[in-house]
Structure formats: structure tokens, C-alpha cells
Image 1: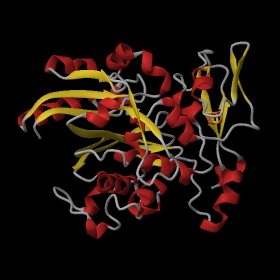
Image 2: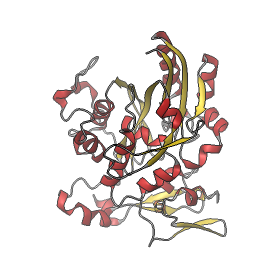
Image 3: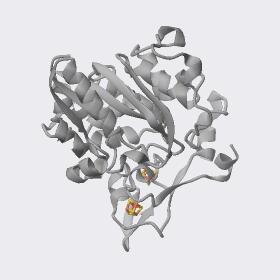
Image 4: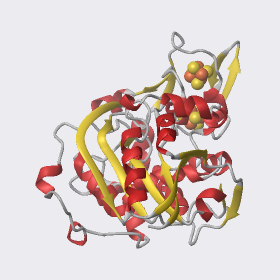
Length: 339
Ligand code: SF4
Ligand code: SF4
């Protein structure tokens, strides 16, 4: 890999590496060294983190531990530094147009350095979901307004299709279980997965999470259907380990899934078991981040506290994902708790 290389990390929020929310700085440091050895003349690590943190770059770099990379001659840059370009995803299903970072689209080479986590909406997040971060806030909100998780998954794949990364690295050393991508629990697997094909790497990551048929995850199914990677285990060549060594016992999945329900009934049942955001007033600082990220403006700040209009809320859980202090909880109704 020669010339300048852009590393698209997962820098979702200013959280310390041990929370397993962001790509670990030690992995990024080693990756930068490796890329230089392979001929890269410069390495830039970048992301466009969740909505509101875009004006807190130095805090983000400090808290995630990335500022130490500067000592190794790695450039840290906001992904939107060079502005946005408007593009039409090829065969876009959820998104007919998207505004995405010029820096990403025009970089001579791109390495996708993702984090393995559960996700309350897309079930898992890895290499494919990591490229959701190349879009601006309006494009992301538009995808989040999708009427179903499947439709959102198609929106993620719409964005991924815009520019296929040259190489993929999935940081699963400390992955996340439970209600990821920001409020789950770290779980040590010890693995780092790499590969040219993002979908293949995500399949391996899902296998570690305990999925015996990763193609049942809407995100992976959508990418496979569009021919972006393997459609079965026999199309993946593992090096350095065997499948039976990979599975991690007791990896807790996100609680928002309804896999036990037959497919024709899922739409109906989803309403009965789907999760809702619920405020814990004792933790809320009144920062209004939740109101700003809500894709359908269902949250209004009243007397310094967020109030959710349940009639408008589409239960995307973005407010839960982005609340900096974890005050917007996920509420499970009786049926979802049962199952
Ligand atoms: S719920 Fe969280 S994001 Fe919303 S105002 Fe309170 S602290 Fe801020
Ligand atoms: S209130 Fe929260 S869960 Fe509901 S639509 Fe807004 S961001 Fe999504």
C-alpha cells in the first residue's frame, strides 16, 4: 500500500479505550506502523463521530487516547475537514442521495478500522456499519427514519457501497456485548480480524458473538444480497485460527431483537416487543444532545429536561446511543423482558 492512507476508525464518542466504544489507540498505532512498513508515506486517522461531538475534536482525541498517536507521526483529522460531496449510492434502496466526507471519497487508499460491538438497531456493528460514519448528520438521520431495522440496514449498505475500503481491520480484543454500540459492556475476546472483504470480516465477528448463521442479521444479509461478499462459510478462508476456536461463550446480544418470531409475524410482533427510550432524571444533565440527534424531532426540552412525544418517536434509540451520561435508558416492556 503506497502513498497516503486514510484510516477510518470508529470514534463514536469521547469515551476511554477501556469502555470498548471506540477503536483502541494501541491497535491504531500498530496499524499505522504496519502501513508505513508496507510503503505508506503518511497515515491519517479520522472519523466523523456521532452528531454533536463534531465540535469537540480535541476532547475526543484526548479521551479516546488517540492523541498519543501524534507522537508516532500519525495525523488526526475530522473526516468532514475537506467538506462534503453529494453522491447517489449505486442501486440505493433506502438512500437515493447522500452527503459524505470528501476526505474519505478522495483518499488514495482507505483502511477501515472498526470495532466489534452489539447494536440496538442493526444487531451488530463492525466493518460495514463503520462506514455509516462517512455521512453527514442529515443523511444519517434520514436513514434512521426508516420504518424498520431492515430498511436501516439497507441504508447502511447504501453508504458502504459508495467506496469499498481497500482493507479492513476489526478490533474485537475488547468487544461490546448487550446494548451497544455505546451502552453495552466490554467483553474480552482477544481477537483482531483483518481481511480485504469487509463482509467476510463481519461474518467472522458475528460468529464470535455466537451467531451460527450470521446471514440472518439484516445488515449482513443485505450486503450479501448485493454481492458485496461471501454468502456462506465455505466462501471464507480463515488463516491463523479455526472456526471452532472462535466462538466466545456467553456473549450477550442486544436486547432489542425478535429472532424467535417467524418472519411473517415480525412486523406485527416488533411493535409489541420493541424497546423504548426512557429518561432517568437523576442522571440527566439537561445537555439537550438527545433532542439534537433525534431524527424525527420527537424530543423537546422543557424546563431543562427532555420530553419525548411518543406519538412521533420511531424508537430508533439514537437518543440512548448518544446520551453522554447514559441518562436515556432503554425500556423493555413485559413481552421483550419475557423473550
Ligand atoms: S437525556 Fe442525556 S442527552 Fe438528553 S438532555 Fe439528559 S443528559 Fe443530555
Ligand atoms: S425519541 Fe429517541 S428513540 Fe425516539 S425517535 Fe427520537 S431519538 Fe429515536
